[in-house]
Image (tube, rainbow, N blue to C red; front, side, top):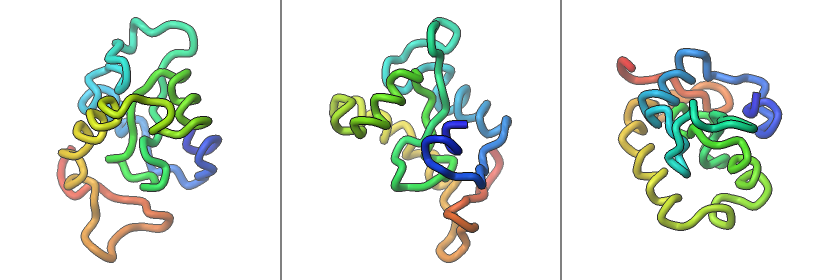
Length: 120
């Protein structure tokens, strides 16, 4: 939903399997910022959202995060909303996944959509 409402992308490439992979394999069921486990977060809960909006909707650009923190990032920007060490840690966590989801030159789909290169 956030992809459609916040990023105005009506051609969402992320499906339920992708969400499960991102939440459980990449982020191990924990908030990318606080490290809280999904099942322990009450209130607004957690969301899967783009990390760096300018990078588009590639699967290597999504994080699991508290909804309240995501909203703060949306309004203030990443650097204003988060400490530098948190930003660096999130970038470092996503880096190993980039080769899986970065297409060869000239092979990105419409609107920057990316198909995984290998098995997930």
